[in-house]
Image 1 (cartoon, helix red, strand yellow):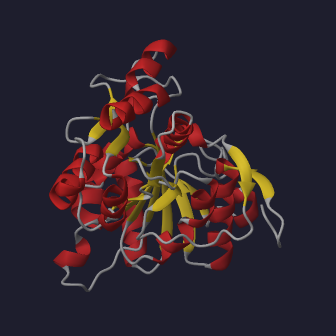
Image 2 (cartoon, rainbow, N blue to C red):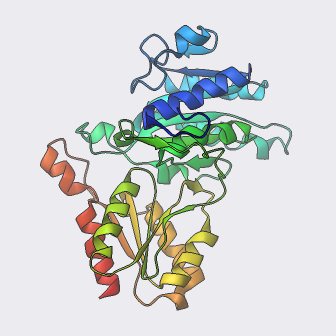
Length: 330
């Protein structure tokens, strides 16, 4: 990782691991719990080596029951601990949805403010890795529908490294969605990177002609699309939402007011998607700023196929983003 004034080469996976190491080192109340997080080192290798470093009290392998160990995490948070619960992939989180929706998200309200649930739940999301229909969901938009929780989608090395600390400091439950295609992404982590402001989206590329709005694993595709559009003298601004609940609507509307066109890129299915919510917010708050209808680029409304060429065809790709931008600009 970066030290002093020199940026060091790292990966998204290593940045997440360093964030976990820092959290465990700095606060005795923090512990990591989930399936295979200890001896196996995590299903995606994020927690590799942490069991040996911190011991089985701090890095706990759990039984094969998402409802049980998410519930245990909620109980630990209520008792004053700062648990980090890892769910292998987002589809398995459905087995703990009752705990997340009916307990973690509601206890503050139902206790009249007496009970906080400072719980962090991490999970892998997204497709593009030939894991077929049951392990390729992008359901973060479902969770962004739930009041009482914060939903994060780190898309960069900086966010992977520095979103966890403010998430642990939040008195309410925080869900972190890590796109599986990002774990092997490598680059240099700037030494100036620090705690992330969870309340604000980030402008990853400024522009004047059209706004590309996205998050997570689709950010890199949007940035490549912006480069291709620039070669055609179309100056695209790229917004990384970062936090999916609560949305930074102010940043979205300010960008659309500058560019007057918008494309929303979302790997989830189009119907009832986060892209639909963002589009509705733009229509409600910036309708008269628009020079063209809002475009949406989403996954095909089918279970994600296993075959590589079919999976790629079902997911939003750079060419789809470029085509949508042309429809808005031409």
